[in-house]
Image (cartoon, rainbow, N blue to C red; front, side):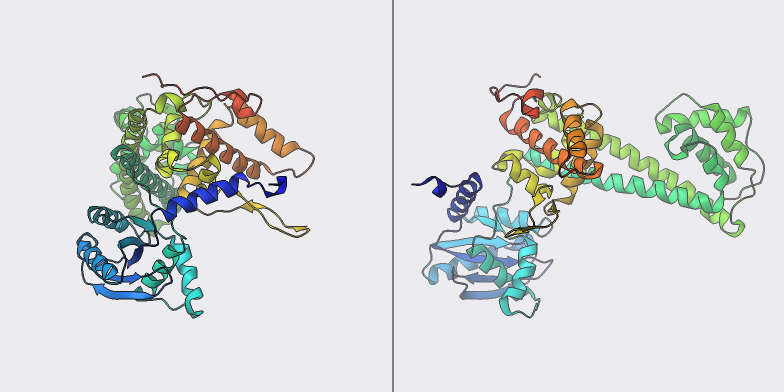
Length: 450
């Protein structure tokens, strides 16, 4: 065989992936496709050419679909098939219930990406019609064409990390929303409070002082300054609630003086400040819950035996690694580091045809939460990781195809994700020489220290 006939690594991986899928979506099995919904499930049984063997709508919840799986197996055997492979879209958490029911019935489950289903509607008859019955047929056709994937089957520990990561993302949004709404309300009702510190929302003394001031006002500013020893003592008592015990008296005094400032919309002041006091409670509760969730995520990382390994990556905190792994799941389910980067949507998207080449951007497919976690991790890693910093500097200073600082950070985020995949899957500590490409010795597998 000539040199030009050899398969690339991408070809080999693609062939292996197709072989694994074909071992699940076997020719002797019919496809049982389910369009999952709340209380109405459209189910269709098809052969591999897309011919419908049976169709039915079940009025039941997802956890009652065992009857649909049994019904599909009966019709598949009547049509000359040995059984079924179940296919669906990964809708919410319902597909996890269906996967469990299919496993109990001795069948495998594959998932079809929703993006392919949306495009498959148009490919079906060019009308873009959308209905549960048609979607079930499209899901069956795509699964038979192997345009599907085997969903993750996590261990209880990995599943817990996944859920903690989702909870953390929700709390980050809640805390950020409360913070921003608080600023907006104070700009309307009492802007002088925001001038009491250089970065008021980042100051624990400012938060405690504003809490005491709003409690004193009870939604009705009295126009009297709240300075003095009594006010300072009340603020000091509030400080532990915001994570500190040391008061910064200049900020406390400035907040007390700002309470006498008449600036702001008078008609809105009472209601806005009353609402602002509630937002302070919301913000505090979100931050407290966020701290608890983050502690649990780091603890789960230790249960997985990865805490000691990820700690070897300079600049990557255990929490940052846990946030990334909460989005990826077990990285061992990916064939290679590049597959994980594609899953994050951080891989370059080629834009070339013939002799023309357009601008290259990242794909932005996959999990947006994973891209965000990697992006946040890079900001903390760059000042402390010499390898990543050197790569960023090279990308922004090279003479050809120079990247902007933002583009370079995206490339560094992809590099960090690849390195984390190696550390987590091969169970080896991070090595600066290997990460920089100056050392080809990938070492031996090691057991992380307890």
